[in-house]
Length: 471
Image (cartoon, rainbow, N blue to C red; front, top):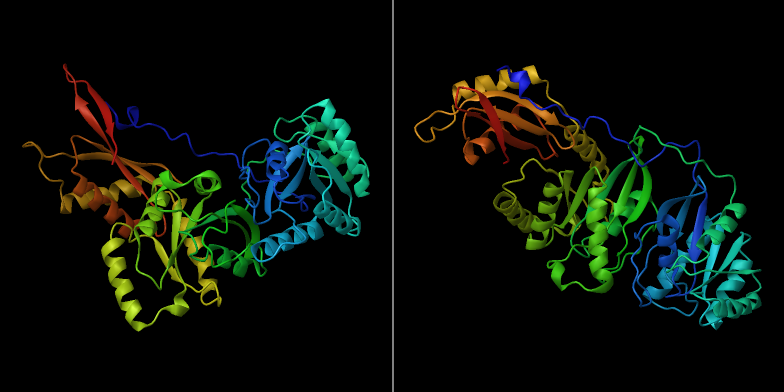
């Protein structure tokens, strides 16, 4: 039986990307309004999926969060904002400031008002600000679930923003009519296209709460793109930001901090953790931020484990390096040697998001990790290397028999996966030895790799079959 008869072909060489290359930026629709009027629910209705975190308490959305949407084949960007309360102080004031920034950047503003409550004093103040913005403003009377409420929504003419459009974001009632009005107000939008070329590489910023993810994104963006606060858990929605660094465009995604026990999370924190995992799954590379000034924790190790499990390329950024003295550096190295012994391949950078120290080293590390993640080793070169390796260090004898590596191939990339076709079982320690030597020979710095077996079994009559055993 020839080797080619039982080596499975890789079918994952081609993939479509969700990102598109356009000649210009997409027009922007900002969704604004006071807290708890249903802005995030309306955003989910517009984009057609549950992305924005929704909970029946005010203040769930804190940053301005962007999503790509399309309606009637025309594409645009939707910006979900935190509750705009003119009388807010502290965190609420900073959330309101982010909403104002969204208004300044938008082409069209959708002002969401709770029709069941009517126009409040806060709505009046926000409405007066929007009238002076010089932008098209569409008044969405939300939570209109029946015809009786449609009559009450007519009272919102008093805001002086034109016709109120009744809609139920929760149930989808009249949401299409609202989007028709939005499209009419927007400048010409690009048509929806399907491209095979990828857009900017997605980089997920991960870490436990208050480790500096939002500070790093703001430093990379050169502006206060997301809220930064000493209180842990400020970020809840993943925040995408296109940033040009090192001569190329990257899509950085700031995520909510991953806490120790998911089963203890409730409400918005639970859904924020789900969004964080979804953001990781959609990314090509993850930057795991660790507070270098404190000892490594179980949370840090679990987050690194999540990235490995997801199969994404990884860069470990030890943040707050400006707070690390000589003694702490000594103990940190000991902790890394002891607790990260299974991930020596992860690229490491020491940075300070607050001061910007060595942040410029992040891009070369990301580029190297992505290059490793997509590297393919020619089959002939891989087999020549393994033949020499097995001659020098043969697999341990099992059950009185010497297993052999008959053939090997790299089944896929992103992440790289190798299949060893063998005559018998290879011990886990030997498979780890093969993985380590593959890394030494071919690189793969910053990328996980997977080595699996496909054991050829003898049948009665001398025929051969194979069964796969995963690492």
